[in-house]
Amino acid sequence: MTTIVLIAAAFLGGALNSLAGGGTLVTFPALLFAGLNPIDANASSVVALFSGTFAGAWAYRRNILAVAEFSVLGLFVLSLVGGLIGALLLLWTPTAIFASLVPWLILFATIVFAVGNFAPADAIRRIQLGPRSALASLFIIAIYGGYFGGGIGFLMLAAFTLFGMRDINAMNGLKMALVGIMTITAIVTFVVANVVRWPEALPMLAGSAVGSYMAAHWAQRLDQRLIKGFVVVLGAALTVYFSWRGV
Image 1 (tube, rainbow, N blue to C red):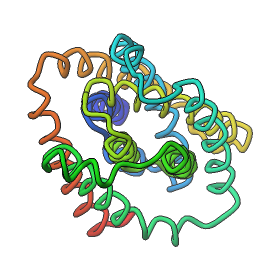
Image 2: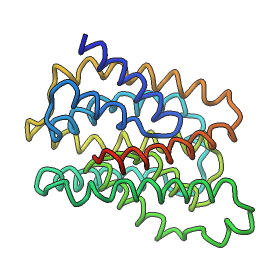
Image 3: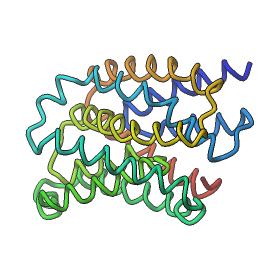
Image 4: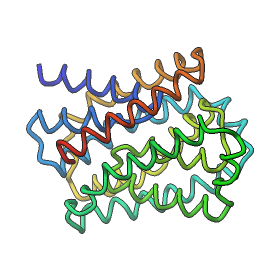
């Protein structure tokens, strides 16, 4: 029964990550419910959602290739390095202080995303980031992704909004690809540290991939305003959840 619950959680988590983000909100509590301690649950959640990130990115591949705002290869390198730093920080430092910031990070990301996509165009142009600021912000986000990653999808969508991107499908596809890249180094670090619970994580890999791929295809058939609205609503819900329950 526990395995079925974990697979279902991974399916939903993968779908949420393809549509907007927040998959960790489903998989992390599910692993805690299965009896894992927080560190093992966090590491196993990263592994469980890993397959879904690339499945979703593959479904969005045409949108990713159309991105012209910046170098995708450069972002991949930043994501690799940042993910490694974040994973090491998770293993070397207590999570309590950083975890207390999670609701505020998600709230900030949700506000930025909402303003960037629903405010008048003239107002948006005044808050767009330059190339250096954009890369610096993504590097910090990559570190956070390796450290915990709860709500990272919202932070990345918010960053892309400040870069001037408006195509939600391209933003989601690039988000999935970068999260997949940054979690590669995190997963290697977690495996070496022996904090991944494979009996729970392996069945979740399949559920995550299927949920992510199906949701990515479904999302491209929807009105982009609906998906953007879903991002804002889910971001508000995540903020309330993490403020109430903690990480």
